[in-house]
Image 1: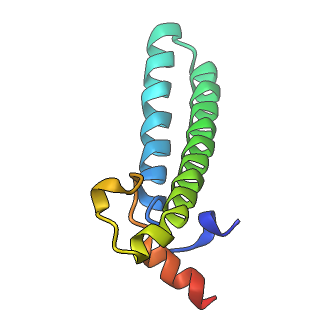
Image 2: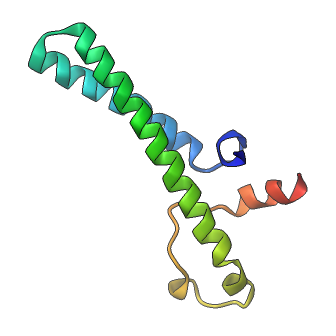
Image 3: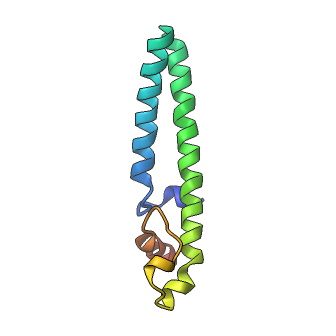
Length: 99
C-alpha cells in the first residue's frame, strides 16, 4: 500500500494533524463528561484509529480520481471541467513513476 508510505504523499500531514487533534478533543470531551480517565483514553484511541482509517481511504479515493482524470488533463481540458480532488497528486505521481 504505497499511498501510506511515500514521503511525498500530500495527505500525510493533514492525516497526522487530524489524528492528533481528534485524539485530544475526544479525550477532553469524554473526560469532561464522565470524569473517567481510562474511558477517555480508550475512546480517544479508537477515535484516532477511526480518523486514520477514514483519511487513508479518502486519500486513496482522491488519488484514484486524480489518476482517472489524467487522460483529460493530457488533452488540455479546462480545470473547471475536471473532477475536483482534495490534494495535488502531481509530485506523488512523479515519484511513483520513478519506482
